Length: 258
Length: 299
Image 1 (cartoon, rainbow over the protein chains, first blue to last red):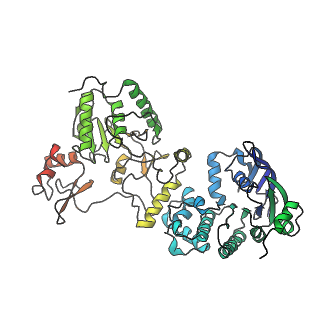
Image 2 (image 1 turned 180 degrees about the vertical axis):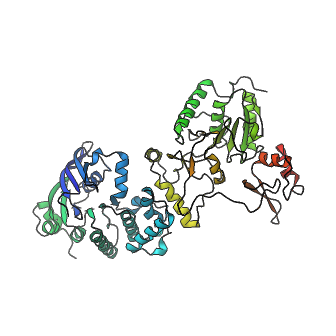
Image 3 (image 1 turned 30 degrees about the vertical axis):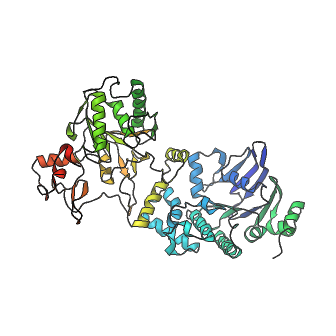
């Protein structure tokens, strides 16, 4: 693993008018590293994710990304075309609501193939082959390749989203509460799958969650947010087993015993 | 005989100038949809208000106008628009492709090859090829600006996945001059190859959607496809039943309620010209009068 970070945020701040989205967020993410961002609703987690993935423009601060060429650039300096290209090649985004992350009117195969076609693949057989390969890897049967996502269960839709994002071998995947809204057994399977893929592919992941169990299971490092600020950050075990900040202590102690 | 009380070709000169500017911009950027201030025309949207405005803006007193609808010179839409310009501009009209200087069309490109002296004006209902894939106009404009056309192939992918082949048969998307993806209006894909490297200027007007776009003469027009599912036009098993023409687009006509049917040229002028030259199809002479007769009696 190289010493240089893949993604680094410095003093990120986002204001929605007079209201604070998040402020003074800085961190570095290295290749293959999984960072969990935890906190209650309204703590600025999703705002932060949108800033990092260039969906929102920060009010202040910067995000730098190291490209495959080794060059590090400020994301604010990218042209719209470069930004879009990055979003569909090097990056992935798995959303809480699969309806936002998928094209519901397009078959599972078409959903997975979209990124390939967007980067210029023009061979139907190869696109379909890769789509089927990825569907199998996320445990969706080959026979479902032409089915619409609407006919899929919640867990399958999330897995389809993951396949759709991973087909171009991204380096970073942003995940916004990927397991909420799923029942516990499906959650467990999905987390298992994500953990396997992350270690197989050496993906860097930033996962936003309010579920500390998800953070513990998947992430190397954890960042705790409250009211738009980072209150504590560190190795996941450290943060969850020996929380220093009062809010983190509250958060950890409020987990229902299994 | 022309109506009094109207400016030449119905539209006022200021409006024509505005439309000509849009046309010039469209020619300068092949395939790009230029917004224009579409006027209310004395016919409903969907009847060719865009095409009529483009024709009115480029029509001169010595032009010869031909209007076709689905290849035919004598359907309601074609007859009405032809009469409209006869009355408001007093220009000469024709049904012969070779004699026309301006051809306004809905759904077909004439079989007779066009020349440099001709302009083809298309009536366009939905100018945006990405419309049914991406409903947001702000987003489709951005996709055009960035030449981000992966989505178009997703549609073709879905076709093959569902039907085993690209099942889009009309309004088949084309790439113009290696840059913009364009909807060729609801012409059958049979006509797509005619747009490529065509000597005539091709203008597209969408009245309701307020867009004009153009393909200049001798411009490369490519139909989108996959390497392993290349673009192909429709083929017909038999020639035209009246004029025996091969390699033309045929209409299927139901003759009775016992399964009787015949296939005839959709381009009526082409068919009549060939019959005049002595070509005889299998059913010429036995087909009902209404189908074989030329001019206005054909349904």
